Image (tube, rainbow, N blue to C red):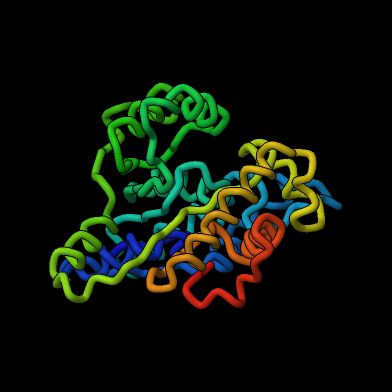
Length: 276
């Protein structure tokens, strides 16, 4: 039995794990985790703070309640280990510490670690900003990912295991089993934001939509040109399904539609083979 934290963030990986005959996943809803974490808020968040504990937007130390709750919960439910999908989540820090004290392995299936040689230096610099990992093991997708975490001082090399992508195994098997006649013509484009990552981090605090990116003129023009081109490809090739994959829906989906309208004068609702 495995206790799963943040289960809503890495569903495809969990889908692979749960079909294993010897694995039984128990998902702890994030609201419950946040509620348990809130017992320590009186020590770590000043009165009047605008931080929201339901979103894990706080830096907390384990409460005495968590030290007592976790061993009891683990024993009652026969939990063998705890897993999450990122070592740096603030809401998980106290659980890493409490699990270590309770002698329960805490394993992180680190997501978004597709590091290549070109961004090892920048990724290392970014990860140095986070506190070190207090759990048991971190599983990463690639050897470059391991290199980055070690250089950044996140944890020792012996505590990082390179596993590859869990969800890619199942995807590969599905594709292998699919016959040629079932294959459809489809193009998938993974979208991006009209700014640098740092620019988005500061911009996301500003209310509004696409207009908030006007200061990133070059990035914005690139965003419009690329997404406009994808829409034009869809129009010129009605037998091909064109998918623009956004990292987030909502505002980002609206931004893509606005960019296409600005660049190509096309309304996405009128393009039957374009999916955003």
